[in-house]
Structure formats: C-alpha cells, structure tokens
Length: 172
Image (tube, rainbow, N blue to C red; front, top):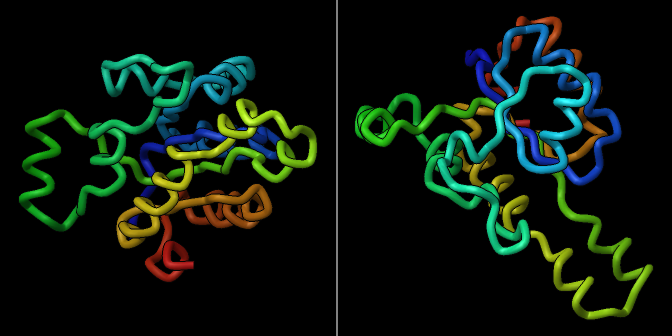
C-alpha cells in the first residue's frame, strides 16, 4: 500500500479539478503544478508549488517544455524499492511523485476548429503522453489519472482510504 504525499497536476481541461485539488490538499498532499493549472489551483487558495521550483528551470520555448526534466521524470519513475534509484534521487534532490493527474491537449477539437498548421502543431502534446507513460510504467509506486472521467472514482478511493492506494487500484 502506498500513501500519496505528493501529486503533480497538469491539465488543459480544468473540469472537475476543484474537488480533486481540495480533496488532496485536505489530506495534506503536496501539490505541484504547471502554468495554467498552477494559476487555477492557486486562485482557489489551495497551496501549490510551481514545477519550476522543483526543477530550478522555467518553462521554455513558449511553454513547449515545462515538465520534461529529470527531477519530474525521476520523481515519477524512481522505484521506491530500489536502493540505487533511491540513492540517486537523494543525490540529485529528486522528490518522489505519488500521483500524476494529467490530460492531453484537445488535439481533435483543434483540428475541428482550424486548418492553420501552426495552431495544430502546438496542440501536439509531448509532456502529457510522456508523463502518462512514465507513471503507468511505475504503477507499483504511484497513481496516474489521465481522464477527468476518472476523477470522481479516484476522489472516492482517496477520501475513503486516507490517500492510500492498493496495488490493484494503481494497476487499474
């Protein structure tokens, strides 16, 4: 069983995020976030840390690069039961991330609204799919939520289990 202590939230669609952020904050989970998601959570007076304060690196290239950093991916991929991983995480000050809430840019909506190649290209998500895959790869140690359709069920589990999840729940 793993208790969630730190969560990374980075979503385009903020629908349903209020209840999720409130549930996590009430349980004492440290929230880390990017750009617009950080602004949204902070506007609710919920404590949140900018991802840049973890990475020591600002968003660059017009926001194209925010989470693609060893401190983010190390925190997601670091195996909690692997002494070598844990030693490297300590050596490089990489915080463990126990929950990743991410969605993908609305690429289909963009295609339906425009044929302007420049706008379409910017909706090709890189960080979101990478974080989803990294978190899925390390499901034995953390939870990934990649759809707002899963928020309600995840909130119910976290609220009823004091932010502790089972391996079966993480696998699902």
